[in-house]
Length: 361
Image (cartoon, rainbow, N blue to C red; front, side):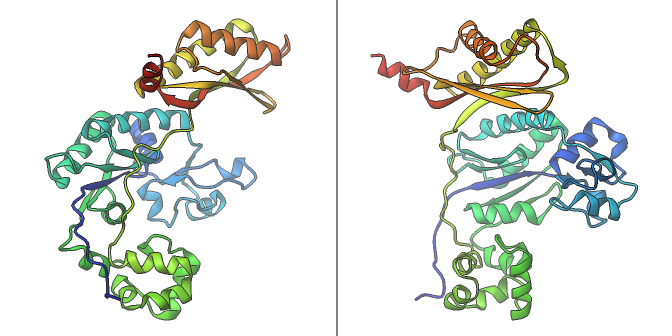
């Protein structure tokens, strides 16, 4: 078998990753937090020591705080740190802004999370580096947030590139420099290398990508099983996975948590109208329709009711129809006295609106 597979991959793939996304939004909205250790997590002193860090700003990271660390440990490392509970409703709105920016450059966008996505820009005549610079500029201009972007010919290298030069950087990995880049990469930076795997590599004396590339495929599979084969190809920069931009979403919807509980039907109907209008806008923007309307209700005791109404034909995207169905479901399941903390409306069993129009003929 050849030492490694030589491929001529002419794709242009970007991986865009917002820098400490949740923390950066909070610092944008409260500039006085920029110079302080900011941890996005519930304060463990007010939560019986429970909770996990969602993210932290770079001041806090210099103290050893990182995502997925227990909030209790973060408090120990930064006793004077600022703890903020995550505000996912706000982060979701900003994420939508950023993903709208992505789609100005290509329709082939694979969202990974609120704060990251893969973009296939092969069909764009501009270079990957130029596109990365323009995307970062637009994100900063419109949201005041910085981002890091990896540019390469496959998703693996683009992802490794975005992580390499954070925060606020661009890394271009092409066919000529990919092995040099991978050879100097610490073994812990490779995808799938966690704490236990790193310890095993330490025992084997494997410190970086060059050491990894010296290991045979058989040895890696013996030591690490299926992960060993993935690591074998990672060390050579080989990855054929496509940007999955056409992956069908399971559902589209909107929910709202209320600071003050709702106690009357008029307030409930007003909120259903807001939710339904948001749902209709999202469906029309993505040219989708659905056969199942889902209604979610949660009271102030955190009891949650979900109900689904499925039709043979897709629902018409009509405010009055959807609000009436939502309100009727609410009335059928909730008594005359209630205290509602959350309402949600979503559509599932989705299909292309274009397909429906064609089927009518």
